Length: 338
Image (cartoon, rainbow, N blue to C red):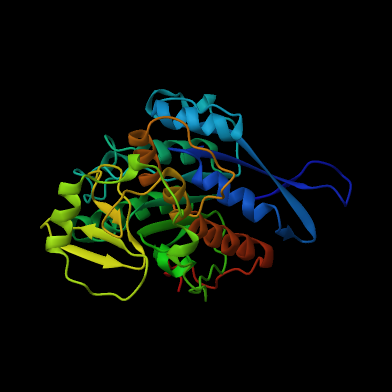
């Protein structure tokens, strides 16, 4: 089961033991805690317990520990699976390195050399009731869809019923166009349905800080260069200017997807300054109590690699609903949720 009781008392909280792989700064953990703070399973509160976390990035480890008082383990590829505690839920925003050898439908052999293999070996050994995986939307079409099909075949062979969907953060109230695939797996063929939420996009005025230091401003040369290329296409007071790979400039009342490896001037508020650390966190849906430590460069990398928290909140809510209602599918045939 997904939840376990920690007492014979009817009023006791249920426990949800989970692991947080490739955890970054903890976007999955924030989302799960937000859901569990209000969700009730058969009238019982849920107590989420992170029994294991892992990330190879030292800056991610420092920030995760600063916010959760829990330092992640290092390289998951070097951690024996038997040393990972038992858990009911696996969370993983696994890195999107190329799946160069996927598509041959040879089970585990297709994923050796990729970090998905480490997820698979943990699922195979511990058999948690559920998992949620996140990756870039390009995974859907990679190698003409063979990569994703291989992943889903492996997950099915491991005993999971899976659903997947590409979600856009814009549809979940965030002013950031960020499309990511979410893959959900359950041990039972539950009736998992996902409906597009009716959430208005938060305006940039609620994201952008009113006053920032000169540190964040681009040079006069960069500002003039941007302005010379800019073709006005909006009447909004606050816009985020985006320079694409071709050097073209566009301005929208939302941000294009933040990227860990993009240049400092990839996104500029009103074509003049870079996003502050707090603004970046807000664009990903992190609460203002969340703190970032370290350099600005590290912050850009860490936030750019994180998940959009409201998207995860929605996925967790619908997973909980599926388990709570406990309605089984008539067919075991895979169906995409809507």
